[in-house]
Image (cartoon, rainbow, N blue to C red; front, side, top):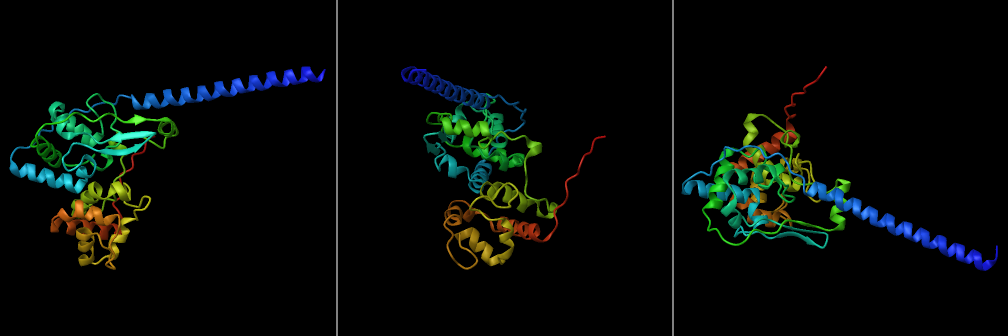
Length: 293
């Protein structure tokens, strides 16, 4: 074959391969977009609700206390108008303006948002850490709603999350999942018995978001077995001032102590400390195992 014809043939094959590569690239993007969109737009079952906001100034004050411990103001802002949680080009996520939502949300809508991470349209709230609140007692949920409803309604709802390519790929890979937990599958801190239930609850709503659902550590946050190495006085200082047992200010715990844990009552810190000691020293109560034949 003449050299000129060979060159033409090679050029054609290169063109064909380039076209195939471009088509594969587009198909991959199309697949990722549609697969992620199916997850983003998925509708979940909305459970019924009997929750009703409690009345009275005591309920409002207690609702503020629960929201402080649970970290609600850290995401939604001290004015509850919401703020950007993640603003990178691939995922723009904003906490809701609770003052605006109180215009349209029923008490049941708020409960499903808190405990299940679900919007009234049955879509998922991606940034809502509902795994920590799924088993929040009715009284706490009702007091939280009471506090929200006691504030003036103002502003507009914040936008829904915006997902770029990398975020959508993470959804397809399963590394980015919506916060719409299936209650039976939620991991809880170890059950050490009724005596320690109060501390276990505080650990769940106040600590699990950083230290992991089972408190075994996550990223920079250590296993909370470390709490058992503190004396009671040292633990109180940790929770009030964010300082280690050696008196060193902790750059992560320090701001959290100032914003959230400083407001814990003494009996709440005592209950949390007792639970962490039990978690370190007492075998947890095993869950019942159901077998099928």
